[in-house]
Length: 158
Image (cartoon, rainbow, N blue to C red; front, side):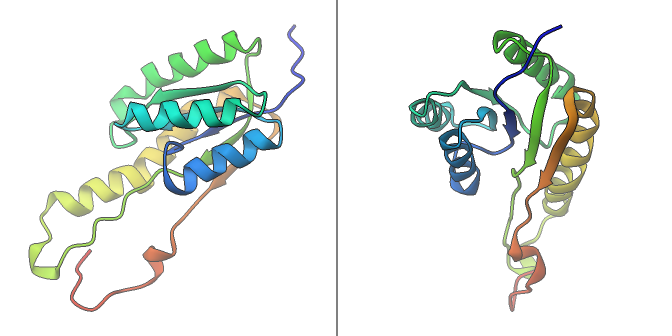
């Protein structure tokens, strides 16, 4: 049986924007982090370096939240990183990654709302389902949303 001393958080979309701030803030408070990035590895590497400066373990894993078929491989990667950290479970899942595509009403394509739904809802749902067995008892799931979903802008259809 392994004993976990430091807490571990998994944060989706942690390479830039709000997610980057979340990773750095959590690392500053002494929590180890695994975070995801979609395509810009160099940005993720910069976050790993900055967060690691706080004396915690930080790893970046690639994940396209819109491709549920890749989640098993992602979970294998999480399991491997947890093993490297000497544990089998984590404490916090922060679902931060998401997209917002703003298009003029007449320019919205059929695939636009499908992609937004796939990433912002479906991906989050099935990622939680896959990771739930690895959350410590008493762990937390935090879903981050954007205020942009609550406001309509004149002329925009999505």
